[in-house]
Image 1: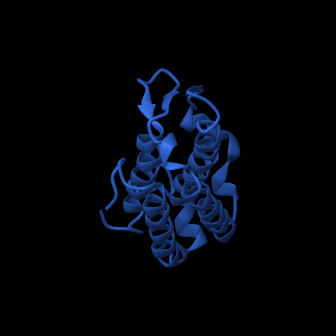
Image 2: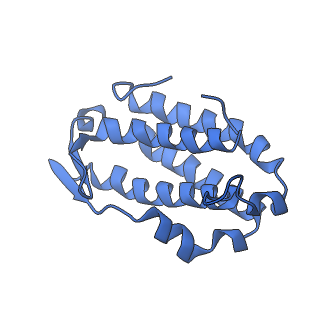
Length: 156
């Protein structure tokens, strides 16, 4: 397992391994089952993967923009609003998992290219306390693994 001090290339490799290990397990879930939440008031697997697509989109921008200056402030995002307005349950499970996999492969490529001298750039997301770019990148993988574990696609 990596840390926020691990080289960006190592974090990118962990991201790729996590994604590729999860794909067969995700694809073993039927489209119908992917639409049903496991518990009341929780997201369905489609909504979880949709949320992870949203996370990839938001963090992709953060990872690129954080390399532009000495410190950056990013807007937060209302995850429930994003998931609700995009109606992920109406999407094909195969299409969602393909989008999620492909986008994360690109995010891993982006992460692998981050110069190590950018690790300590301060990043503020929404009203949260500032964190380093190294923390933000590592936390992205931790967050992804957390949600994949909820779906039984990885074991933490």
